[in-house]
Amino acid sequence: MELLPSQSNPFRPGAGATPPLLAGRDRELAVAGRKLHELSAGRNPSQGILFWGPRGNGKTALLDRIAAMARGRGMRAERLPVAALGSEDRLVRELQERARLHDARVTGVQIGGMGTTPRPADPTWNVPALLRAWIEADTSPLVVLLDEAHSMDPAAGRSLLDAAQAAGETSSPFLLVVAGTPGVRARLRDAGTFTERQFERVPIGRLDSGSAIMALSGPARDAGRPMSEEAVNRLAEESGYYPYFLQLLGSAAWEAADEAGEMEIAQAAVERAIAAARAAREFFYADRLNEAERAGIVEALPPLAAAMQNGEGATERTLSRHELTAVLSPAIPGLSAPASGWELRDRLSDLGVIWEAAPGRWELGIPSFAEYILRELRD
Image (cartoon, rainbow, N blue to C red; front, side):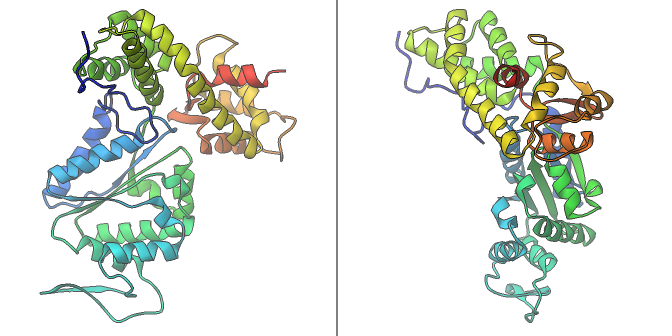
């Protein structure tokens, strides 16, 4: 029996691609839903939202879903590219475009019968006024979504956050939703001391086992090629419940079954898929290793991996703050510059090699990365 053309591979392992089923994010979507409800009821949320976690956990897909939720409530949901926060000058030009003021330099705005009108020019560009003009360019509430915020220029970030704070104080109908890797928290601290209170912080990590199974089995079933229970359990376990690996392995399993003309994704197809996806995973690990080399901290990886794995071949585990400091505190030969335990921790976290998955509990940002490190770097 041939598959119908509509029964194509539903899995999407590309960077930033929206998965067919956004499983396991009910808590995160509930946070966004609550704030959107406040906006629709005419109340400004007291805080924005900060989603943070290692790459590959679906933060971009989550922002896409929140944008759809906002538009479904009749709101404007607009992406602000992180490139616009490369400098204060670029931020101003971007906000002028969004506020439909173009080349005007403004210190404030006035709303008249014909819409937003710039006040007289001033030598300084007033970012709060420009943001307010953007908010007031339409009667519907504005939801601004900023992805990859760990890459923003601190001065431009400070200007935007100051403007967002001012908008909240004037009860402007506005919500700022930000996402970034673990390094985003330090970048926001650089932007202003008040940012910890400005956002409701929501960590985004791996899925639980049930959600991982749902993310695999649901799309496969709906696309016409269901997975056997044994197959889906094997794929979920192999993925480490990591969203990017779920999509990568799910896609490979679909293709393996398709090539064999199998109407069900069974164990044999899964084993072929795991072998086929190995090269993509190796490249993914290698990119992270190269980043650590460029940052001059690659020598810290083997002792960290050994501690996280608790012995080669053992199940990866989390480390307490005390355990992590003990691993990273001793002088490590080969580092490009001396670094204390906490400095190494922050540099590793900035790269997403490790992250604080729960208060005081640290885990690897990528499952199975410890095994790769020990294989590639152990003498």
